[in-house]
Amino acid sequence: MNPISIADKQACWALDGYVPSPEQLAFHKGMSKIKIAAGGERGGKSKSVAEEMLPYILIPNPERGYHFHLVGVNFQEARYEFEYILDALRELDPGNVKDVSMPLQNKWKLEVRVQAHGIEYQTNTVETISADDPLAIRGFESDMTALCEAGRVIKDVFLRILGRLSSSGGI
Image 1 (tube, rainbow, N blue to C red):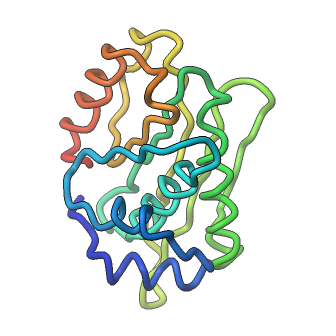
Image 2 (image 1 turned 180 degrees about the horizontal axis):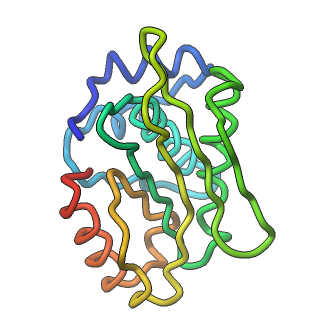
Image 3 (image 1 turned 120 degrees about the vertical axis):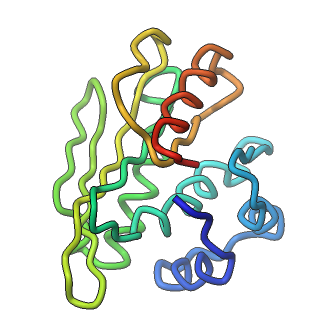
């Protein structure tokens, strides 16, 4: 998956009403494959991460659906980013949301209908993953992953996520 230009990101955000602060914009402009959204409490980190992923989630791929993951120390830690993504998708077009599963326990999953020029492509997915057992982070490909509350995630989890991303060429 190739990086998206800041102009294309901003065009997407204009449709869902997201206006990044100067600090958030600096995060979004970064072209590194590994980004860190750092700041104080209620500084907009979760919203920034969700909005960074949003334009990528809407990219059509005729060969296969893209897979996006939100990883937290537990399932609860990844839910804010998931809810921001879901809200933004519904704001853009409620028809984007093909299916959503949000049980009280365990992972949340969102299937996103991706269309371009009147053609419906493969379904992209967004899932939450718990890192409470680092050895369980296996057996899936990820095109883009966010570590939610990354300061609470141990190094083994970070390394396992890099492995999942490298197998798909993800970011």
